[in-house]
Length: 110
Image (tube, rainbow, N blue to C red; front, side, top):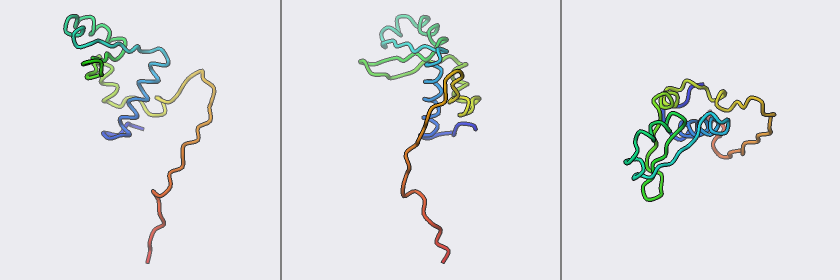
C-alpha cells in the first residue's frame, strides 16, 4: 500500500513512519534554535544524516531539515504502511479501533 498523495491520512503515515524509526533507534531527533542553526549549518547538516532536525523560532518548531534520503523515503512512498507498522521482535498487541457511527448508511434503491 502506497501512502496517500495528500491529506490527513498522508500526514499520519509520515508521523507513524518517523516514530517507528525513532523508537527502533534508527534515527535521532535534534533541535536547533534559529540562531544556532545560522551559526553552525554544517553541524545541522551532519545531524540531519541521523534523523530530522527541528529548527525553532522563539521556542516553537518552525522548520524541519531532512537528508535527501529521508525526504525521498517520505515523499516517494517506498515503504508500505504494513512495513511501517511492523515491529520485529515485539509481541503482538490488541488493537481495537473506535467504531465510527453515522458514516455509512443503507442505499436508497427506491
